[in-house]
Length: 113
Image 1 (cartoon, rainbow, N blue to C red):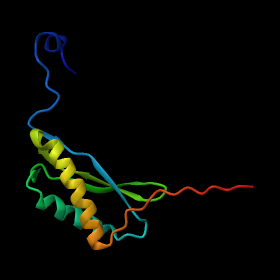
Image 2 (image 1 turned 120 degrees about the vertical axis):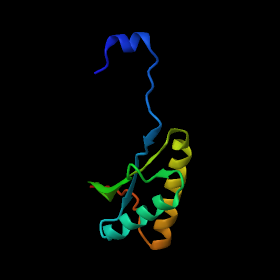
Image 3 (image 1 turned 45 degrees about the vertical axis):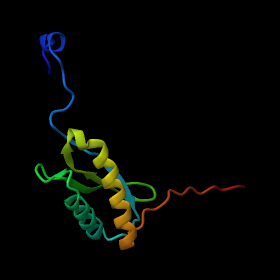
Image 4 (image 1 turned 180 degrees about the horizontal axis):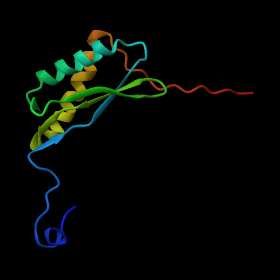
């Protein structure tokens, strides 16, 4: 809760000095999840913008129709937010390709009678 006097009489800031990215990537159901989590962890350790304290959160967080969704949630300094998002997304895709980790394309079955 924020007292009314704080809203009316002072400047509010949405973020402090750090912010958590919220990146999601899907992997095929037959993927070794330990391999995926280790690969993402390596990507985050290699990126100088990612803070190690607080620790990044990397977890399998949802069973989607065509994939298992992996949440990649590292903390970065506020000025690094946009650049870090792009760098990490690119590095995850490239690392997955190199290691043969499949990012599946959504599929839908169409039945014509």
